[in-house]
Length: 261
Image (cartoon, rainbow, N blue to C red; front, side):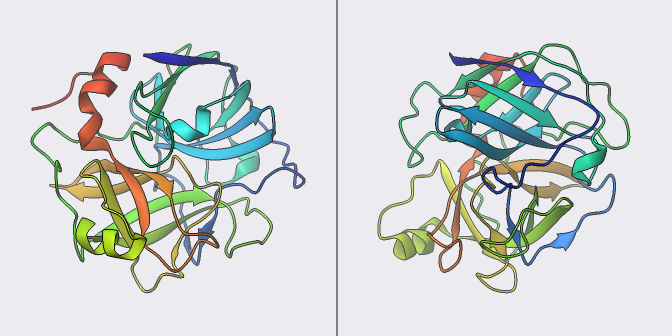
């Protein structure tokens, strides 16, 4: 179900505005080399209250997977992809539609959305879609103690100026039971939790919403989750992600992308 109509402008050079809300923050992350995360899309979103930055995952030549709360209330947006450096993105002017999950009300449930590029993106070594889970994969998997990755543009610490280079953080899965105990309420099966591989201080932060939590199965990279929410100040609790495998029917109904069995 489409809940918003969006306009995305893609162009070859980003002018960074440090007065806007900070872009995606990857705290204590590592610099990503070119082509490491070719599915990574950065969204600069204009809303009534100002500009918001979110991430997304390219899942086909025309569709980007992101968080519902990123695109709710969107008036217009710009999307960037094709480089690990903000200022060298290689993009064209596009018009897109946006879809928010019909049951979404707040980030505590169904925090998933999609945006559509008017024309297909041409794939190359730096722009590639990421695989969705197959229907038999990851319906309840938490990847406890397995290494997961979240890429994003932005800060190296909470409150610092946005970073112009793509970074990534290594995380590992946390059981929903342990995550529920940390947060003080029951985590639905449509969520998955993860925390920094080395500590809570290796994590995502404000503005990082919509970025993909990714894993690799049989040498295939899969988008496992979508950054939804975390603790105030960004550290101290496991991060909560929307479980992509719980929404395959929704993704198919909006995009027409065939889901593997």
